[in-house]
View: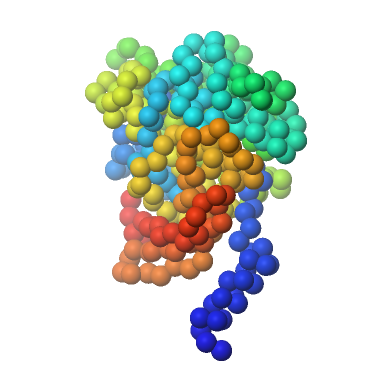
Amino acid sequence: MRKETLLVILFLFCISSNLFAQRTENVFIVVIDGARYTETFGDQTHKYIPKMWNDMRPMGTIYTSFYIDGQTMTSPGHASILTGTWQDIGEDGSKRPDQPTLFEYFRKQHNTSLTDNFVILGKTKLSILSYSNHGEYGSRYGASVKISPDQYQYDDDKTFNNIKDVITTHHPRLVIANFSETDIKGHQVHMGAWNNYVSAIKKADNLISELWTLIQSDSIYRDKTTLFVTNDHGRHTKNFRDHGDNCEGCRHIMLLVVGPDTPKGVVDSETRKQVDIAPTVGQLLKFNTPYCTGSLLNTAIISKIFERSIGNVKHARNFNLPQNYPKPFYAVTTEPTGGN
């Protein structure tokens, strides 16, 4: 029998045996509010995110050209992540998103419950994320909300305790959580603001690592959960204390994806957008996102067929059957072994 025939048989067997079936049943989106790219992936020493860089990055895919083309503010940024559309909704939390959120798609198409979907917050104004003003969706398909008391709104430790409490009590399937301490510390005007800002990034880094450990130690979530770590906005290139314009510092943000369907050690340097998260979550949780304008992050969900090594650089070819995507084969690049 010819080698090509054997490969075809093997390929068909893999499909029929469901070898390449997606395993993700739960998605957590964690937003480090207002962390600038130059203090995260853009820092060659990665001294403020050692756990994400050294421990978590090799387990998943990072995006080094991940950008915002909408407003670089908190409420629009979070709403753009959840809707897959650029949201110009103001910053004060008085207006809900115009387009359906991921929660609404998930509840309407899969009949998931209120407590299967959660918004966990360090900022009260972001309760607007629980559902949109869209006429076909809205509050009947909304998510639960867990908010820290007012005196603890900007305390990421309290937010993490909220996450643990929600996990223990409800085991939600779709979550967005806001770690707000980095942003509020960055807005400080006293002489110690810089140290407080980068210390808050370090805290978020540690808490995200703890969250991943918690997920993997939970029998309901282990090997069935994909984690997205990103930002709602960056900060000015020349003035870390503020944000809100179209400068590189405000627009360039980070994205790390780790989960059972995500290739390990992949660096995607193609220009991607904040609105690309939502359709990717839809693909992972198997629901349609008809109003999204973002594109699928194919490198976040590709199942690996084989790797070949050239020198110390691995080149992986991957197989995927994404929704409405025409090409099943892609080339992606992993980092050189032993690199920073």
